[in-house]
Amino acid sequence: MIRAWLIFILCALHLFISQLYRTTNAVLAPWLVADMNLDTRGLGLLSAGFFYAFALTQIPISIFLDKVGAKRIMIVLSFVGMAGALMFSTAQGLGGGLTGRLLLGVGMACNMMGPLKLLTDWFSPRVFATLSGLLYAIGTLGNMVAATPLVLLVEKLGWRLSFQAIISFHLLITLALFWVVRDRPEGCAPVAPPPAAGRRAGSRCGNLGTLMASRDYWIISAGTFVRYGTHAALQTLWAGPLLMEALGFSPVQTGNILLAMNVGLILGGPLWGAVSDRFQTPKWVIAGGLLLMAAITFVLRGLPPGTSELAAGAVFFCFGLASASGMHVYAHIKALVPKEMAGAAMSGTNFFTMMGPAVFLQGLGIAMQGLYPEASRGPQAFGTALWICLFCQAAIGGGYLFTRSSYRSGNPTPPGSQPVG
Image 1 (tube, rainbow, N blue to C red):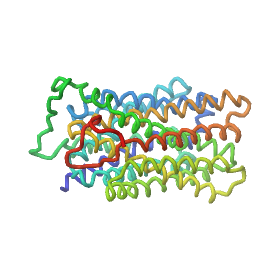
Image 2 (image 1 turned 180 degrees about the horizontal axis):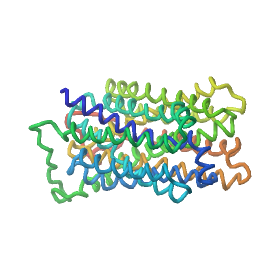
Image 3 (image 1 turned 90 degrees about the horizontal axis):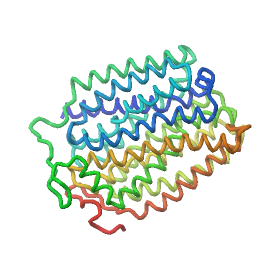
């Protein structure tokens, strides 16, 4: 059991470093614009590149995670990520910076699905949602470090040296992963997938084919696409310019407000997980969270210049708290598939989780630049961007009500075998 908890800690640290890398651009935006000569469209593309690469890498991960094992994939990709982070920290323009962010996205692509797969094999299904919520909460500390602490570090060392310090920590936890982690407890053989009608036994693409036929899978994936897409578009980039350029906050104040959002995320992760495990209703937790996000986004777009730091922090805290409910899409999809499909199901869903930020980051940047070319980071531009987010959150929140609500840890029904309801 001690090894299981050591594995949990290392998994949490790898999610922490992934969250840290992906959210740095929100507070680094002024320095990146100056050092790389970026406009609003270029800034959006630079941040979206991480998520495009991360999302596309979910496809091979979903095929090989159950077969190759989380440990090997996480270690190999971690070194790819460190190479990308180093390239990004030395980039002089959009080309070099984008290449670094693409490699970084590939490198971090298994730092959520790998840990979830390890938790599946090392812990009881009865506590999966609670542990995944706790994992997410600890990982969210990376977002907190990417707020005020990163601003203070950058003001002292510069953003490039600060990024290289993060790489050094990443190397240490990757070496620890190599020495400590095993894919499953000793004496526990991997689960062999049973032959299924219409699917060749052992086919690497069979699990994906089964998922593609499930209406639940597509609704759940659309939910996580919008939830994390709109959340990360703010958290990883646009909240910084919104707060600093449109609402007039200083970099340190902006870091404090982003810190409040991440406190909401940390508190929300285990809170929603405990609710989901207690009442076995991830469907209602996630749908309610999406609709609550839409209401808070409406409040956010109404904040005027001159808003107090406390008021803005409270709104961002509530946004983070509501958004944390969406983490449990993995517990939801996991409960609807056989155990041998767990890795493929969660990775397939995670493709849409990570494609969401890419689309919203770049799409909102294009919309703001195209509709407001003279003031692409002004109050009106951000107001329009937030209307887009609000509409998507409300629409998919309603659609999520049509997923199945079954949540069984014993022998869940494969997707497509029951009507939605």
